[in-house]
Length: 170
Image 1 (cartoon, rainbow, N blue to C red):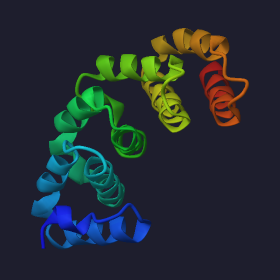
Image 2 (image 1 turned 60 degrees about the vertical axis):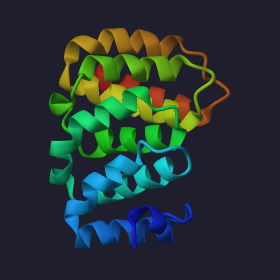
Image 3 (image 1 turned 90 degrees about the vertical axis):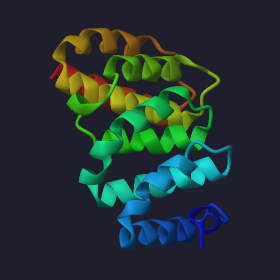
């Protein structure tokens, strides 16, 4: 059975089955990453599998960091953005992020864009906070950004920004 045929829907159960398949055959992780470059919905489903697998096995992402970053910077698929941002937030040391400056700028773009989904904007905040923890010089700039973005109508973004402001001011 091909990996793509495993991804017949977006349910949590299907994603877990596919991730378990990768656990049984870790050499297939590369092929699952390649599915992340396909059109929606396969790309989104594959990215969820990669995220689930990498959260369980954090060391496996290291050889794929360049691929992860490059695809995050160019994808238009919301589900791929969410999953790859989540991997960077939960698994990756920001010092290891390939083209970290471009990723940081992309997160700022997404955060400030009304066209982005709330989830992508929220995960962008989380990753920006992670960058600021590692690079204290970013704190003042991010404090200004977090204080100035109009997010009153989005409680989840407001809470994240307040949390970020608190962390950066300490």
